[in-house]
Image 1 (cartoon, one colour):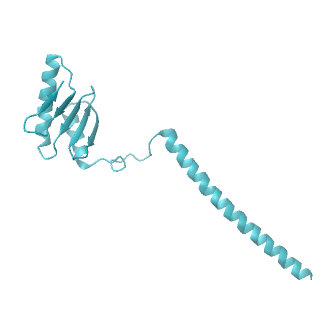
Image 2: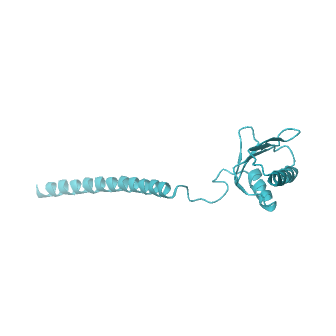
Image 3: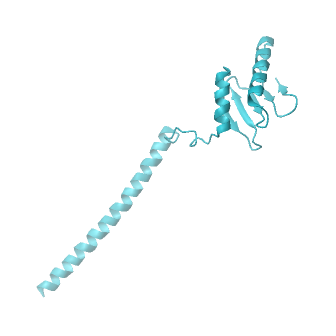
Length: 138
């Protein structure tokens, strides 16, 4: 009789410890998830710095480097849905470049247009290099 009671006590203890471990396991998973959400929302971005995590392609990275070499100030470079390259200039203008044409030629044309507009005192709204002749709007 005493052995049967001891066995029942041991089985209850095993079940309770098993249940406690399962509860602790799920609580720890929930806490890790909450901490992850808190860190992402408090810092605003994920912690990765690589271009792959920022969805940058090799074309946009190469374009950024060429713009920096040419001393053209820009905020952002992205790829549009039709695969054209969009450059948001620091002064608010938008430049659309064709990936099919030579990037260096387009950048040198951009430099020329920007210098002319600076001399004339005009502000660029958009410049489109996808066509045979650039389309400029002030």
